[in-house]
Amino acid sequence: MRGKYFKQNGGDLLQQLSKSRGCSENDKIFSAEELEKATNNYHESRILGKGAQGTVYKGTLPENRMVAIKKSKIGDHSQVEPFINEIMFLSQINHKNVVKLLGCCLETPVPLLVYEYVTHGSLFDHIHNIAGSSFLPWETRLRIATETAEALCYLHSAASVPIIHRDIKLANILLDENYTAKVSDFGASRLVPSDQAQITTIVQGTFGYLDPECMHTGQLTEKSDVYSFRVVLIELLTGRKAICLERSEEQKILVMYFVSLMKKDQLHDIVDPRLLNDTNFEQLKEVATLARQCVRVKGEERPTMKDVAHELAGMQAMEMYSWGKRNLQVEESEHLLAEELKNIYWDNATNHGV
Image 1: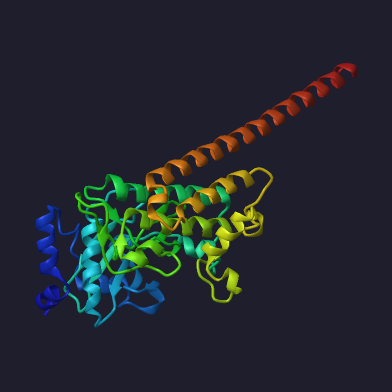
Image 2: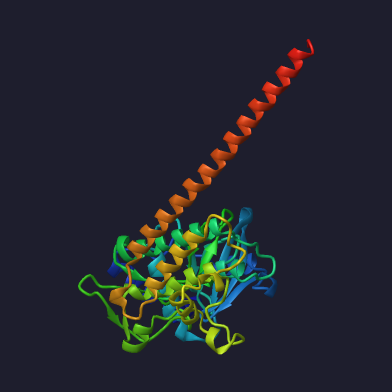
């Protein structure tokens, strides 16, 4: 039965792809018993999340090692290819802002993938106030955006073969204990052959984040990820969901409403009021302008992820400089105050013969 499941779950395909691409099959082959024990037989209390490709469970391996285990939908053999796809992509990626694949199990009725456990859930949870999630201030949001952009830049420019993620959204950006971004879910990703700038494909992704040019032409390019990332930026700025049918007709699709307000120079009307302070509105405006550039309908008019990552890194550096400068000013003020108090103390002490 294990041999049967291995073939059914794409084990032979995985071996062929591994040989053709010159990479190892995975870091570790987990047994079905190991993962059943780790998840208390996939008890519902261990569920971390559910998506189109299956369910993710929290698992505990020996020595209290925490992992996340993605389980394909039972009986849905159409999900085998995305699972094998994800193994192949993640086995080639080594980046601090991409979630790490630890191994897989193919000897079960459905394939299983095992990842590092990312402790603080998804960016979606925090931005949209899912129960138990903490509020993220602007400085943290800007850093997370920069880290995500750098990961996408790596996929597009530095990976051995360029990779288009194809489903960038808040739910696929995880946060570790230090709130460091970890891009996840490569089931829909595609390689870009070295002799092609684009590939023809069926439209796939999440509504509200999909590149309209790709939807219209079926041509997938790196700029498709740029478009999806712009929605992430807009959600970080506004705290609003990409699509919300409960909002008025004008506001249902966030990106359209955002662009309409930007044209009227009314960013104040949509930016998350909790982010605003006396010093950061100009920077929020800069990020909003960058997001607007990424949302252009024609892909050729959008910046590359390298350009976006560079812009955001520059803004983050300025933010850190300003923060340090403000702190230095506070320290200087405190030092001057201490000196003034000391002088007053000694003057009084001298006058009273102490």
